[in-house]
Length: 302
Image: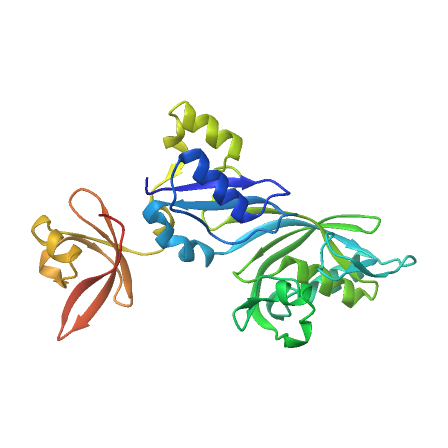
């Protein structure tokens, strides 16, 4: 099986737990997730199976969206509700305009400082593991550029702010919560997180692990599985002649005389490549001596 399935991860499970569960349900070894979701978070977690694991990184690089709850007045070491409380502020009051102004600091292109308790690596070690083993002094935190495409407050109730965020890869929603609390001067942490989308995958086209087992058992899972090229539609495509397929698959360079169909732009570097029967993989466009050719970059067939 070389497919992608969109699992709705429950709270309390790590992303690795979900991968292990999918392996067991589908009785297959080659399974990978497409971006870690913290155990306290739930939501969209695309899972790649078989040769689809080759596109994990491409899915990981897509924009993601979340619904998050920020609790003001309590700061934790992990920036979420699983951590130890570092500071508590009881008496504060803000207008909606003041809160919006604090959120304005998190919109657009920003330099974000990631949490110390994160999976980012320092000299091959995860930062959270270094902190837990008393080696926090080895960490030199640096800001990273991220892009917050949308950030909309959904509700404000007492010290709880529910908001929607759409952001680039590498964004820590926990850090948004921490930074807003810091701007307001009362502190804050992330008390709820639901990932609503990851690239083309969303809550509507996802299934739970229980449903995965049910559909697999009654042989109706196919309708919930996605082909590899489903996530590659940002690449234009070409179709090569059947007499060029074997040569291409074995690493040969195919020039455009053996393209049956072509739909790409002059600036495209990579394209989806199809044979007369199926999707083959991602090809790299080569331009030399006024000739356009394609060479295999990633293969998704045997």
